[in-house]
Length: 197
Image (cartoon, rainbow, N blue to C red; front, side, top):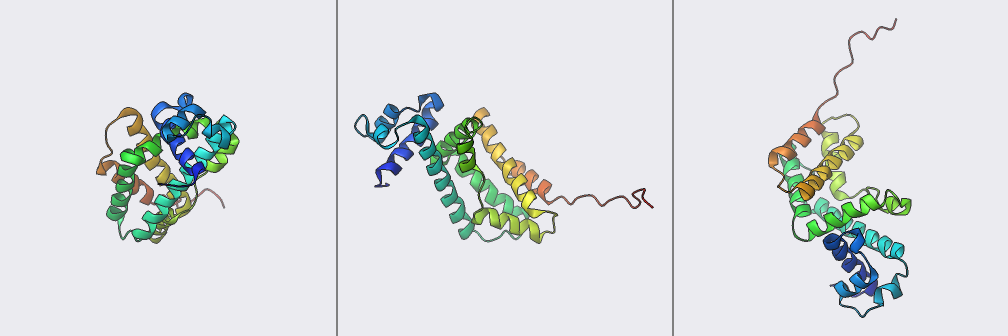
């Protein structure tokens, strides 16, 4: 368990947000979730915006650590099946246990960031070892613009997670395989004659 009090409070804020939504995120609720005396959270984060910013920074740090570790443990996929399996494992983590808690908080923060550009800047997707592995695989398969395809693929995977959190159900291997197949699809060749002379 983190010993730094600011980190403990940020983790407690993630819990509160995941379980009670944005309206339930108050200094007092975080005090209770962290098991701290009343007034502790406001002493460290005087405003609600300061608390929310700390929460988002902690959320991004946890996500990045997870993705960095996953990318280092799992080599660049050898084929589409391996990539789909790796993405499926990520989706499973995001829909269960601690991953589900962070996913709920992440999406709540993403919606809130529409009105707070400072939060949006923190939430901008960052590079990490897992993303690099996907990009390297797509580049090795000869797709055009592997960076853009990687972003699109991971955004679609994120959308599946969001849908299942909201509507229930699980993500099937076929769902993931379909996204990987789309990412690997080659752009059609331009017509033989483009009409210019």
